[in-house]
Length: 251
Image (cartoon, rainbow, N blue to C red; front, side):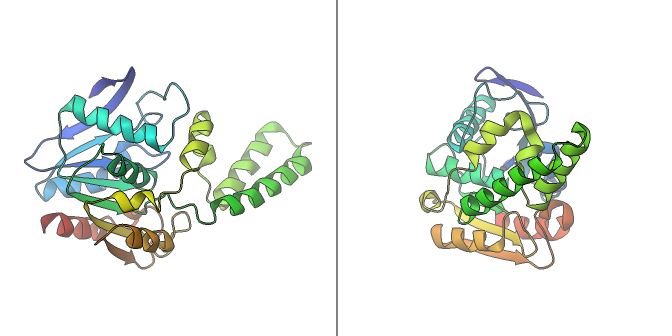
């Protein structure tokens, strides 16, 4: 379905039930990326509201560069427009960061929150990426004589290697910069929802240490670490994830 939110055409899907769960996908993903989780929730009797966040999938790009606060405000406007008060919110990666920001600013007030490999901790981000930017600049000098197409392939391979999502949506580079400039460890202290955090111990993009930091920030939260699992938990071990999530929601 399509809906107009603040002059942006937004693609979304709503499966109704007495208790509806809002799904927020990560950077570069779409609502369909969480389909395994959506199906599992519906089998457990929950309704699901999923969407392509602005800039992704079939939804319009933001009119200007957005930060986490802009995405949080959008989520609030979206829920008002579709007239849904979700029982729980589930956010993967950047979707988790958006959820934390939305709870802290009052745009989300659902009693339960699930953070799956949530981003938003920038502990070593600036130092690490300053180093990589220097490496990238040096690499650009070394490869400037190569054909453009080959240079682009090398650039993408380099950013994939360091775990950067920057090139996944090159038309949203300024938005990406704003999103990753905000550290949420203090902001997370404002989250009052009952919170479950799930991380994979092989995740290089949002390591378990992020979950440990959030656990200290969010009062009464629970951290589950899945062994041998990377960043895309919902794709790697969907059955385990659904079991953890449904168990948490059912209590």
